Image (cartoon, rainbow over all chains, first blue to last red; front, side):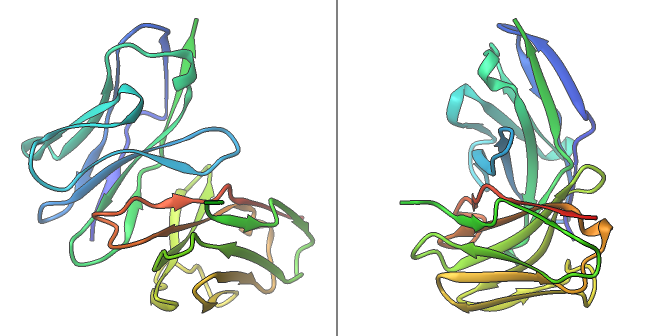
Length: 113
Length: 115
């Protein structure tokens, strides 16, 4: 069965600084990987996904993520954070033989002006 | 499109009472998922349906929980009897196809408080 770990519970950055949120997965074959964002009081919204091809994927709102098989990682990055990026971010992993999507415990991002 | 609609937004009930959460998926979406979110355990998949048929209910905590999807436009998650440890935000999500190729569309959730 697949699993995913987000080692950072809470991250604080200054507006304009770069950002990297970590995600590690466990799955025997090639996984499908996703990043979702959750604003307070709302459901989750898809930022980007990877399931094949180019290991560097671009998403909405200027986010990107890189799939590194050797490190079992799928870290989310943004070169310059905006105050509106403050939210909770979830990494998720799926597998080809099921439609179950397993989410990490999330990383809460706080942005200081 | 109105998106995934969940009701109620908030539910407060006493221990032992029956609770029913409702979800209307996006029209045309063949898959429906129920998730539970808590501080301690994060987002847990409870059950998901494909074409109204339950496919995987291995995440349902115990027999007190049941979910149904009587038609393509409606699903319920029922807890009977409810307990304080069931307090959480319950999300419904739908997608038009396989999850590796189709993003989940989440509702705004139902915040359940059991006293």
